[in-house]
Image (tube, rainbow, N blue to C red; front, side, top):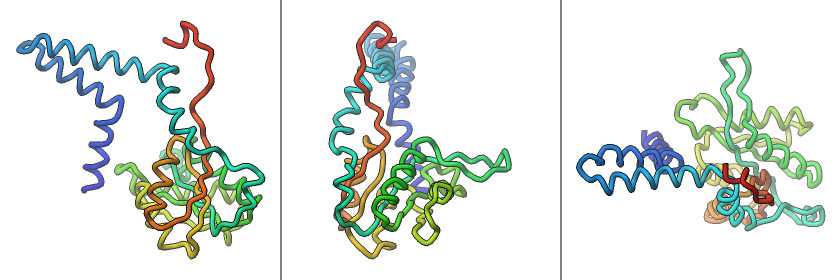
Length: 226
């Protein structure tokens, strides 16, 4: 229950939910507090617009993605105990009679994990239950494991932790299941700073291997602001 409450609050307080709440409050109080109501409505619209255009999203995400760079071929020669890949979503395709399928974000991370596995030949740990309370019967790590297997990773080299619902629980699961403390951590570039910090708090020596970059170098034009 607590996880569901926390997840609901997270969805409400992160964009775009928080901007819609601002506008809703503005409409509710506009009759009694006209100036404040209009200010909240205007602020909500402006903020929603700003996070919907490329120049602003790039400016917000690039500092996070620039914190760590992808592992080079030379850097993959360093010693580690395992490659840990964090999940990033899953689709429940039971309505089609199909097994759950990893999201694009999860697939990006799996592909990077498999690439590193082929170079380094370390145990490949796939971590993630489901961060969506409505899909608690669907395992993100399970879907990633099937993809890794299809990409040629032998079952004996796979470690699957399919119960963790967030990054903190993923770090704790890795701590319980892995023998060593030095790990190659694979997750989206914008997520790496937080994920690496949580793994370090669990006692791991983290070697970041970010992937799935979203920021771009764009030429500004009027299209950029639509």
